[in-house]
Image 1 (tube, helix red, strand yellow):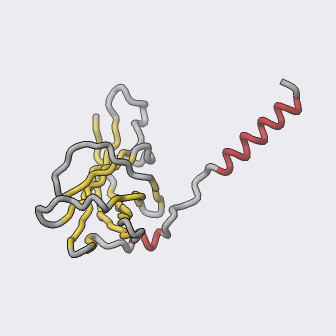
Image 2: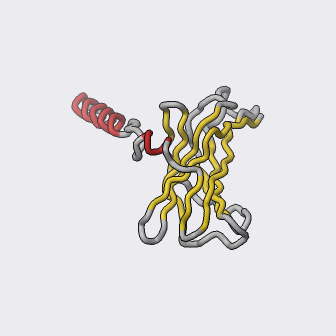
Image 3: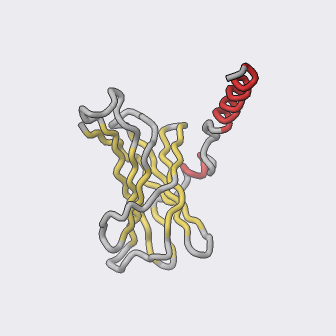
Amino acid sequence: MSAKKTVLVTVCLFVLACGSGPTGPSVPLKQLEGAPETVVIEGRDFTLETFLNRDFFPICPPDGRPLIAVAYVVASGEEKFPTWLDADRLWVVNDEEVWEAVPVDEKSPCPANQFKRFARGGPKWKPYIYVDVIIRLVDPKGNTYLLRAADQQIGLSR
C-alpha cells in the first residue's frame, strides 16, 4: 500500500473512532434520576423489576462478561399486558456513569401481566454494587413514560 493510502486509511479510522465515542445519555441524568417507580397509563399501574448480571464462569475472560440487564415491566392486576405498549430505551445508572441501551424482546415466556426486555453488552462494573435502572415506555401515540427501579444489585454468575 502506498504512503498516501496508508495515511488516508489511518485518518479515516481516526475520524470513525472519534465519532463513535460515548456522548452521554440521550435523556439528562437528572431526569433519569427523577423518574417515578410507578406510572399510571390508561388507568393501570406499571412498575419495573430487574435482573442484572455479570458472568464470571470459568470459560469467560478473566475480567468477566459485560453486564446483562433484564427488565420486567409489570402491569397491575391479572389482565393481559397491553400489546400496544413497548419500550425503546433502557438506562443503568451507576453514580455519574450511565449505560444506555436499546432493549430487545427475546421472546422468552413471562406472566401474562408483564413483558420482558433484554439489554446485553453493558459495562464491566463490579458485581454486588447497587444501580438504578430506568426504562422508557412508548405508546402508539408516541407518548413516553420513564419508569425507574432504584437500588438494584448487579448479581454474579460463576
